Structure formats: C-alpha cells, structure tokens
Image (cartoon, rainbow, N blue to C red):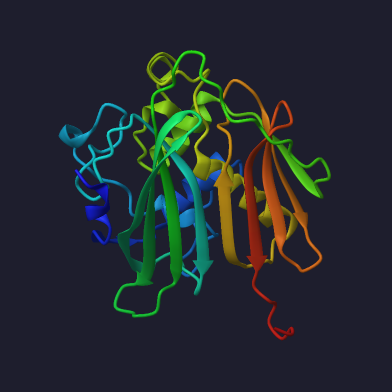
Length: 287
C-alpha cells in the first residue's frame, strides 16, 4: 500500500470554545480554576482542548489511539510520537467562538534511522470562526511512527541543554497530572497512563509526559514572565521523551530580537524539547 495516497485527505470538524475546558486546564497547570467570561482570549495552544478525537470505543486500536486507515494513513509501525509542530496565530480566538477546523494530510515520508524504519506524517490544521473565510490559526503537526525497540539497539546521542535560562521552572510530573491532561484532550494513547503497556509492550522506563503538555508548559512559563505578550508564531521539536519517574525543567530566554527561545531539560541535563516563539508587536510600536 502506498501511504502517499493519503496526501490531500482532509476532514472538517466544528466546535464551540466553551469555558469549562479552559478552567480545567488552568487547574491542571496549578492556576486559578475560574471559568472565563465569553470574549476571554484563548491562550496559545489551548485550542488543543477542543476538536477532540471522538472515535467510538469499537474504533480504538491496540495503543489506545483510533485505528489507522481512516483520516491518518494505515502506518503499521507500532510506536507513535508527536515529533513537533509549527503555528501561526493570525487572529485571536475567544471563549464563546464557534469554530471549524479543517485538517489535511500535507505529506507522508519514510526513511531508515539508526533505530529502524521511520514514517513521518505531516498534518495541516486550519481553524476559522464559523462562517468566516479568514484563518485564525494555522498549525502543522508532525507525527513520527517507529519500529518497536530492539534489545541492545543504540539510541540517538543526546544533546546537552543550555544552562543559561533567563526563566526556569521545575516540573515534577506524576500519573495524576498525565491522566488529567489525557482526559482534557481525550487522548487515549496508553503510553501516558498505562504503565504495564508502556514498559512491557513499548519498552519505555516509565509513563511518557505528553509532548503537547510540555509545549503548553513552555508557553505557560512565557505567560508567567511576560503576561501581556501575544504569541504570533511558535514552533517546537520534541527531541527525547520525558518520563514521569523524574523531574524536568521548562526554560526560556528572551533574545535580542524580541523572540523567545524556550526549551525543556531533563533531570540529567539533556535537551528534550527545543522551541521558539515570536511575539506580536505591541499596539503603536514600530513593525
């Protein structure tokens, strides 16, 4: 089967940006759990609380995701990870907005890596307010599928994380945090909550902290230190898994050009996620 036949496949779903998921994620991030009023701006990346994957129980695959071959191509490799994303925020989204998301398979590529065969699927998402032509948010989502781990297989060499963070926060993940985020995003992927599955079937040492959760924590750090900033674009690459058996750090540094370099560092000092945000110019400032 030629997986490239899936390129161009698309689907459109609708949703309403309601207050309760917003408040629930705020509580999960240890912020006040207040339900926002209609018109409250949605923080960057919090659109992941909506357009949830509502596949039926009979459609669940062995790993907890939907069975492959409907919208996503039927990749047979067993291990699936969120490799990264790129975002452009064109117009703000607000609580109360009725929105549509059109998702399209943008590309499918495969190659051989040091750990075996890899398949990369890039999905493009475009979010609009219902009835409007203007795109409010464009997201490219990179998914990587990998072979099962082989005994004695060498993992890619890690990269040391920068140690000169301007802002830094220690995060101590646990299975409750991972469960709550999985529930908020209706993410059934068993690597985040099923310890027997993740250790015995996929061969990892512990539960894996969601890549999107780490990315959200990075931008939450930015919100903490630059509360009035508006993110214009954001991109991240997930480089190494983060597990619930150890703490990790989210870090950031504002650069001379006004953009922000963000990264996650594990308990051993290795770089696990690398990201960059550009900020919208303040009203009245030079472009």
